Image (tube, rainbow, N blue to C red; front, top):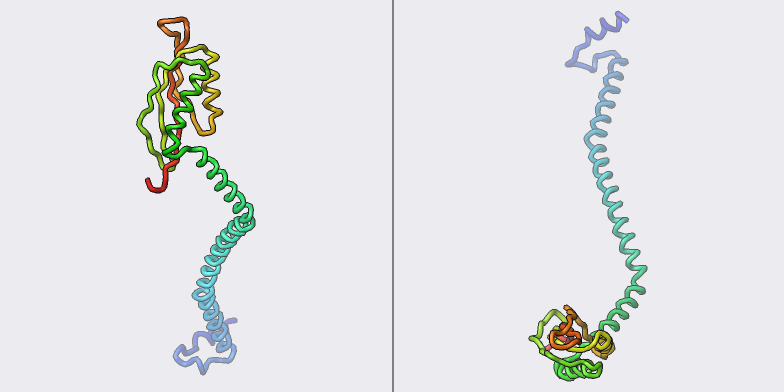
Length: 196
């Protein structure tokens, strides 16, 4: 072992060609290992980072693909549902009167009250309140009658072929007679035409 240490001390670092063969092979092995490590460290570690990033992207793409595949699988059902919704929306729009039918609808509301046996104190159409697809037409109503007549009137409004809703219903005992007074706002709606 001492002989080996003595030989190492006598090696000329500027002239490795004169070194004994075992030392030359050892140096070659050390250089080879250093090169392999440097190649792995500088080249393969970058590639591993890129691979990890690509694996994450692959997972995201798989998730996106699965989500889109589920949508595509339901496409026919969604198309059918869309057709039904358009049909339903069209049916609802047909229940809304146009501008020319509003006067007739107001007459229907007053006729419903009269046929229920109510006495009108106030029947006041208010200004139209436009919205995105429709316009509200509120009507202030104050009628005298019995509780059952009020129920018949509200029920009659619900049975009209057009949409009429009642809001802010207040029923009080009339000051002048033993009858009841009902104040309410009846709202009817009309479709906003494309020209508006």
